[in-house]
Length: 201
Image (cartoon, rainbow, N blue to C red; front, side):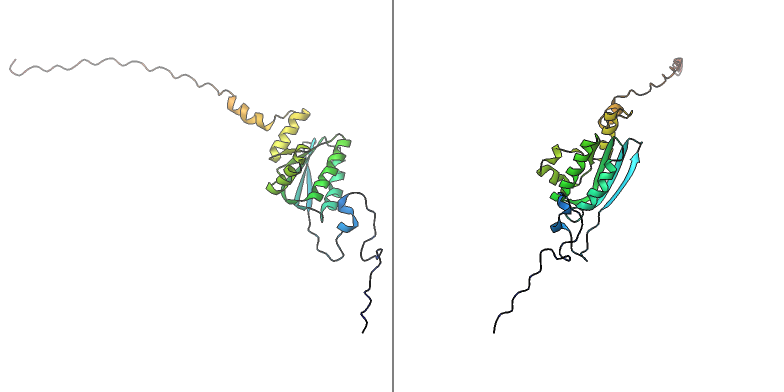
């Protein structure tokens, strides 16, 4: 009995690598494209303008090899939104891998080319650790809270706001309104001591 000859598929089989343009970004490489029928974790990207000078972009979900392409395609047009400062709210991002970090770096490079300030706000423990281990927390402007990222932006662009650090300090040093002095009370007349006559006087 002879062994059956194994059947091999050609490298250019259409059901292996989907057709479509790719670039050097890791999330778009063919080996990172999920196969047909694969459940891809979703990531939500929503944004809102704040005072016309800041764009707050909220990301929800995982930023990894499965979602990086979507995140990149969603964020790059927002950087072109002609807003001086873009703040990425990462408070709802539960996972950030190396491909996700590459996505954020691509967005940072686009922002630098357009003279747009990019800030990362409120990364949770996992993403914050990924930024720290890779040293990217020194590349990005990272703020512990969204409010601090927005306040710092207002102070930097001269839009009339003050930094969050100055808010508490100013509140502590601002003088309180003086209270009206109370009117002194009139002294009372001393009462004469009562004298009792001794019995039999």
